Length: 154
Image 1 (tube, rainbow, N blue to C red):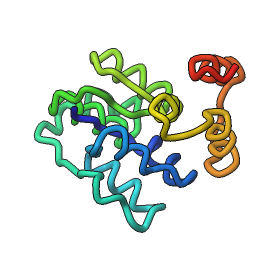
Image 2 (image 1 turned 135 degrees about the vertical axis):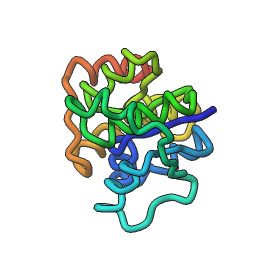
Image 3 (image 1 turned 180 degrees about the vertical axis):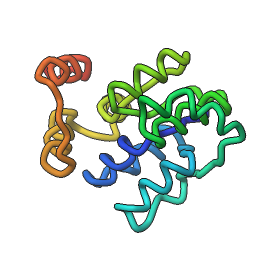
Image 4 (image 1 turned 60 degrees about the horizontal axis):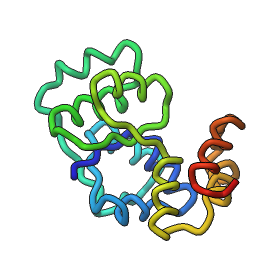
């Protein structure tokens, strides 16, 4: 299964020291060069299972460049090029654009929920709290309640 990621999910998981969950769930994750460059600004060493791929068709990025940042735009374009099964992305506008392009999208909360289902984490609520404290993650009360209910924690 090919999984392409934007910056946000990888960064959030690095900040809460849970980035290994991506490798545990997906084996490897592909990022476009723009995302690798964004990650390199804040994170000195990236995981070896994070594969950087260049886009073949840069023109596809222009479709989203006016409304999304370059990392999101390249992640969507690369996911389409590679026929990815999944795109990891948190930003609302990016998720909407990816979904409108026919891509399946999961954010950091979906990753954590799946990790709990597989026994890789004990508590989604605890990981959400870590995201708040360590990654300045914001989540609406309604979304948090839904995620916790889906994870069987409410």
